[in-house]
Length: 313
Image (tube, rainbow, N blue to C red; front, side, top):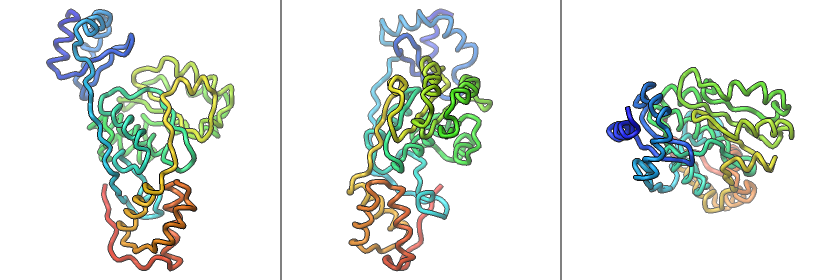
């Protein structure tokens, strides 16, 4: 099979193909790219790259991503931050630029393999990381709106995924711990698909541990994604390997929208003055605001529920 034959076959299969420097990228539904076809693509990679460069065959098309107003969804019972924790990008309040760029990357199959989510605690960094993990391996993905029902999504939600690792950097501060994980990073998940490794509070890694990650993030395999979440700066060289996203505290307007939607879901009738005071105390952090909001009914500031809370899957 020639390079032109391969390009024609990919076109017939509706596989989107494009170049990323010297890399050949593509997006296809699971099972479309067979082992034999993949081997042919690797063998003829230089010729395929040349064809795409010369003729624009299969070049990535612009995909318009709109950021709609977020949709509040309650799942289960318990404290408000967990019950209302977003599981899809459409459920996130604020962070408009972050939402749009991540949604675009997932929709087009061009998501960068090393991401840095940086910002104060309680602004949704780890939540976004979990959504990315589900979106990459969801049976209907890659997508910014994971189904939450397939085995890949459920595994992430139950913290029982073989493809997604969420590591607390405070307990992996030494270089030996990072080197011990090297084999896990490079191996394919037993369940197939993509491997996603999230380092929470990665600024707590020692300087030597951060340096050990430089090699890992220099030439990342196609199946591997790193997500670094941090509330403080860390090794500049490592930061420069990442596509960086700033998670900002929500504006007063965004916080009012969130609290209003939660109150409507819970059937609560808030006192406007108390809600404004709550906004000041929360300082733009949704988690803090929801924790404080949950106190108010018990203190008698908000009257008894007037309607049952809505639920969704």
